[in-house]
Length: 288
Image (cartoon, rainbow, N blue to C red; front, side):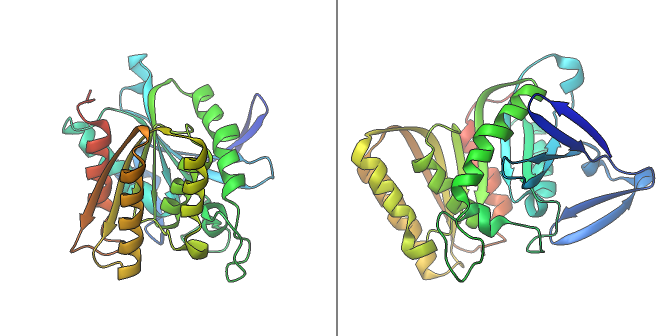
């Protein structure tokens, strides 16, 4: 391990050992000999960053192929649930770049360094706005939002050449968190890709946050891509429809909303297609 101080931050570098690299992704712990690392892994770097409370997050970082030589600045795309999603979504994004559908970007995944749902993976804590007894440790969304704004974003902008809109993707509970963030920390990101959000949490509490925001604001500067899948259950689809209708009725100045419904897809199966569609829409014609 190598440690590096950067301002107020002490970060732990986690490069692969001379013989092995461990990549938590897609619910599996994959062990790959370095000499035979697939091309899809070669562009991924790992680094740990601590929150003010001491929670350590594993960052998954993918730089554009020409980053070292170009001297250019790049937009940043943040991906939640990186232990589960980063490997395939980062490769999918790079394919979209190659087909000139999205601009080159710095991809930053936020994870925990543990297999999805394994002990140490605190997504239920970080993505939930309120405490529910059924989910010990829940209710940490405010603290996680502070980590993003006070530690992660300053770290990324300090370490890399960044510029342009900031984008963030979250699915399921991470989608709930992004919806919460939209109304509780507006302006933290420019573009939100929210897929299959768990709006049911705590009696649909997130709608109360929207009502509170609307009582004091008539504008909301953001670009939102919001999706749901047909096989996710009636209540989840209904909540998505309610949020869609609510935002349409508010007509917030500065907010643009695009919604998509995927009738034949499941909660997990919808992720790649919704991610690709969302990135294409959010970036529009902003290709390299």
